[in-house]
Image (cartoon, rainbow, N blue to C red; front, side):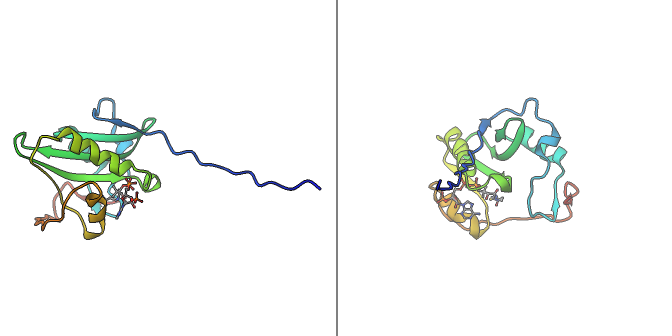
Length: 150
Ligand SMILES: CC(C)(COP(=O)(O)OP(=O)(O)OC[C@H]1O[C@@H](n2cnc3c(N)ncnc32)[C@H](O)[C@@H]1OP(=O)(O)O)[C@@H](O)C(=O)NCCC(=O)NCCS
């Protein structure tokens, strides 16, 4: 009697390319980020943020932006990473790591590269060699750039 064999289906990891230019990127391609934010910038606003940042890296699967990081720098001493996000369906595949490593490589000669995060995310940054410090932040919850999340 033939032995039934269960086919082993392997889901290939998506091919991600990392881009440091926003040329040709439309707001629709950055729709749906700010996962979990009750109030969030629109896709238009996010695209403007990414365009005006000192350095931005997009993780793309074909033309879809599946993750991004941006960095602001004074060009002398300090770099700040305000936003880092990978779409939920693409997490756990090393994309977030690769995005932050791009920033660290780009600013390798700079003294400070800082990010403010929740305690739960700290281990992610520690794996990349970053250290825990106390951060202080001012937030304007009424800022007009924020809209109810869709
Ligand atoms: C944080 C985030 C960017 C990580 O992206 P990712 O592509 O899933 O990260 P990676 O696949 O490179 O993960 C690398 C490692 O970090 C760990 N890690 C990922 N997200 C983590 C989290 N939220 N908390 C703790 N560890 C985390 C993973 O377990 C993995 O470790 P492993 O290789 O030992 O399993 C992603 O979870 C995300 O977009 N979260 C929502 C937005 C957010 O919190 N951004 C950070 C703002 S400061």
